[in-house]
Each structure stands twice: as C-alpha cells, then as structure tokens.
Image (cartoon, rainbow, N blue to C red; front, side, top):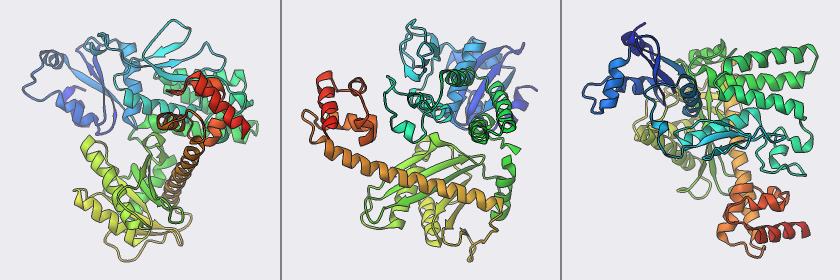
Length: 468
C-alpha cells in the first residue's frame, strides 16, 4: 500500500502499530492511545533524535491492530515485540526492572500476577511491559474475563470473590483441575496474542454445549466470547451489535456512530454519603476496566444536580489533562434537568459539542438536546434496550460502590477493637480485603500477605474474629 496511503487510513483509536522496512520486516512495534496522532508524529519535520531519524528513513509501510483500550494495546505490544524482535525496540534491553506477568503453572490452580523478578521456578513469564499502570488495567480485564483465582494460598472456605462470581472458585469445588487447566490454556493464548484461535475454540465449545442442552455453560462461553471480541475488534463493531448502535444513531439523529458510550448515575442512599458512578461501553459491550467511581467531595446534603456537576467536571477535566479518548455519547440517569446540568458543565470546560442524552426511569422517556418533548421508543426498540442496559449498569455500579463504602466504615469501626491495629494497618487490611467478611474468612498466612502485618499481628486479628 505504501506509507502515505497507510497514514491516511489509520484510525484515531487505541492500538498497536508496526513500522515495516522495504522487505516487510518489522522495524519497530509501539502502542498508542490514539494511533493516528501517535503514528503521524513520527513523520514531522525536524526530528531531533538521530535514532528516530534513522528509523523513519527506513520505514516503507506500516500495519496496525486496533484495540478497545490502551491496556489491551500493551499486551499486544509486548507479545509482538517478543515474536518479531524488531531492531529498533531497544528500550527493553537496558538494565531497568520492567514488570512481567507471571502465570504460576507449577501450582495446582495457577494464578496470574505482576512481578519484576523472573526466577526459574516453573512459572511462565510474559513481557516485559513498559507501563505498570496500564499493565494493572490489563490484568484486571483478564481477571474479569477468565476469572482465575487470585489468592496466594487456596483458602479452606470460599472468599468474597467466590460469592460474587469474581472467581471460578476451585476452593469451593466450583471447577475441577481438568477444566481449570483448560482455562489456563485460554489465558496463555490470550497473552501470546492468539485471540483469533482462542475465540474459534470457544465458539466450537459453545455450539457443543448448546447441542448437549448445557445452556448455562453455553451462556458463560457466549459472555466470554463477547468480552474478548470487544477487546479484539476495537473500532469495528461485531455485526449482532451493529443493529443496536445503528438504530441508536438514527433515533438520536447523531452525526457519528456512538461506538463509545459513557453513562453516569448518582446514589445518595436515603440522604447518606453521595457517590457517583461512570460506566463505559464500547461496541455495546461493557469495558469494566474503564469504569470509574466518584466519592462526592464538594457537595453536601441531598443535591443530585450538584453531585452530577462535580462528577462530570472531574471526569472530563481529567480526560482533557491526560489527552484520553472522549465518548461518542454521554448518557445520564435522570430527566430534563439532569441533561441540562450535564450540558452546562461540559460547556464550561469546552466540551459542549459532545452529544448528551438522559433517560427518566418511570416511563423510560429519553431527553435530548434541542427538543422540548422526550422521545418515547417502543419497548422492542434495539436503541431503547441498549440505553436501558447501559443505564441499569451505571445504577448497579453506583449502588455497589455505596455498599462497599458502608461496609468499609463498619470494618473500620470493628478493627478499632483489635489490639495492635493502628490507622496504617487498618487501612492496609481494608484495602486488601475490602470487606469484613473477607477478613473474617482469612487465615493467618493470608493476613501476613498484607503490608505491615507480621505474624504476631496476624494471629491477633485471626483470634479476635474467631471469638466473635
């Protein structure tokens, strides 16, 4: 195709780019939050770095892979560097201690974790990765998709993650060794950049499960395929999903397809401490690693509009500062007043052109800009179903955050009664276990993994909760 033609077609999405030489050899692999902006920056005049100049002079073509998030791009980048061994990717060859992903395949039920050491202990190591913050996001997305166990030692009783379906729970007999081994094999394919092969295998398993009338298993496989497809497809929406998004664009009279949607909800739980939530959907699928929670700081009392202003301001000021990706559509849980507040706040920070809609729960009325009367769509409307799904997820996420904060306050007061637990240790325990139930179910070895908790303190905590 040639470099000039390729530069015209590269999208403004997260992804990985590959610079190719005259014989199609890979010269350099990089990741970007915005492929178009990043790749074009290499071809500016007056490059001051001699190494970059030498690279650019050799580039004859480029290739790229779009992803849903920058975290996903990080995984692609590392696997491609390992596979292609590009001449100009020298930054990972110095003495810095870059992080790796460690898959503990020598364990009975392997875990996936971040490490900076790579001893010969029978584990598999992936990387190195240049951005530990993005790596944590990627690890979170992988855990949400594959549900591997995360506990250092397999507990005798199921932990909170097992109860909320955040883990396949080998501790509780939720999965056998054979099936868990297959799950680990799927994670390997993902980390090696072989997602196409992985998804084909999952489709085959799903069809087989349906034929055997194992509908619960088939549904779980469908959800995993959807999660992986969203990461794989990037800006390309899968064809089951095009209908929903296209219909939404049509009924809202939008100028662009609303591939990326962010939705907000405020929860004050009967006048108690207010919180806000933001959920992100890409190609009609949840991007859980992009979700955000907001503890309201500047508003007191019951003030829905004030809380919404604060959340909108904090979210998009941060996006502006970080030069992140903006949504194609913003969805607010509420009525006309909520819509006007959100638009007004966006206008104050220079983002008044961003499309915003709100949906009122009672009659599912959709309020849009510039129209006095709300839209009333058919209950069968694909657009309404998508809006309601996203709205409900934002509401669920806000409520879950409220419950989490209330649980932490209860836990903090209970920990005040344990001898030897000061503010630092209290905070470390709360951050590690999240809930009272988590600490109650922890053994001494589990408690010792918390920063600042030695064996003596772990025994005190363990004994205290056994006496209650």
